[in-house]
Image (cartoon, rainbow, N blue to C red):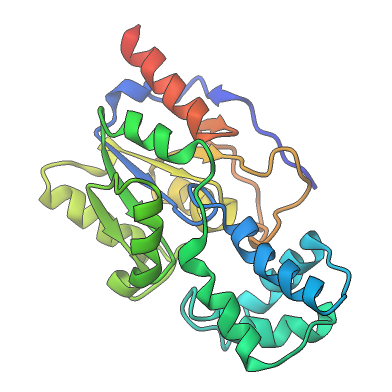
Length: 249
């Protein structure tokens, strides 16, 4: 089901000019995770003459990724491939799973991400909050132009969003840096991993609805309840434009 929230900010939302920190989900918000995942799968399918449906692959990935025996992402892609390959009609050889993981350093940013982050970094301290491991984050950060003031990965926190403990470590960093939780705007595309829990923790949030032109949640688990965000845009460019307009007002 395609979900749409009111565009821009709610009447109760604070002005974008009042924040000091922007915290970001990385994979799916800034890095095109779905294209990065489906491209190598499509290539394997083409090599073996197998029809390939990207949305079906994303649905299978989503189910496999959240199995009890899941490992840290993206090392877990090797295991995930073994689960989904038979269902997609692809060869199950372990070498293909390793190939899926090996493609991660080449995952690209959404076309608007790096430029928008460069603009936002002129006004805020940017903090990455990613469920990816540190080795993968380093590649993603390079693709984005290394815009971050600080970064927290699953290796650093020992947990994954939506665990509040992940956010609490970031709050502790912000406080040690001289800021407060109220100085933070959390920016993300995942309702499940970010928008819902950020609301529960009292953060102001901004939903970047990357799949606004597509139904469903793709490779991301669907939330049990939709959370109306404080701010809602369909691209990072829209957020950067809104910030500049608020500061110019």
